[in-house]
Image (cartoon, rainbow, N blue to C red):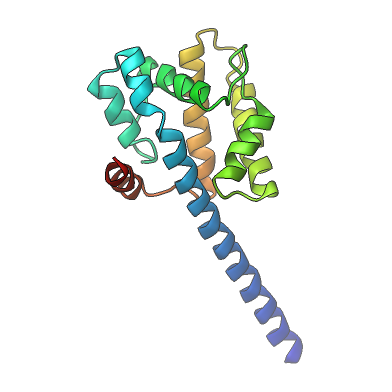
Length: 166
């Protein structure tokens, strides 16, 4: 009987730890998204982006929303460039991405995990020649991975915060 209670207690602690990790990881994703989005206006002007692209960013974390527009990939690439997150050959700059994640609240392990996820997505879509389309596919792949972990932030809250910062 005591062994069963011990197992139950251990299982409960594990569930609570995982729930806390998911919650804190979701908060990090919230901060990362908000920080990354700060470059959007500059890229919107530089690339003369349409309202469709604005809509894509407003709906990015919605799992059911389809991202299809090549210009969205171009915008993501521009924003990543503004944050010095990509190399000259348009691949993720691992060290800078790790630092960006840590700057926005990730611990070392979480930052490594995020960089690894993006790197895996890059590998999956390495055969796409068009950099904007490749970036779009990598972003979609990353979104799927984040949703599987239940780390996707609430975009409406992020948008409200970004608007209040203006």
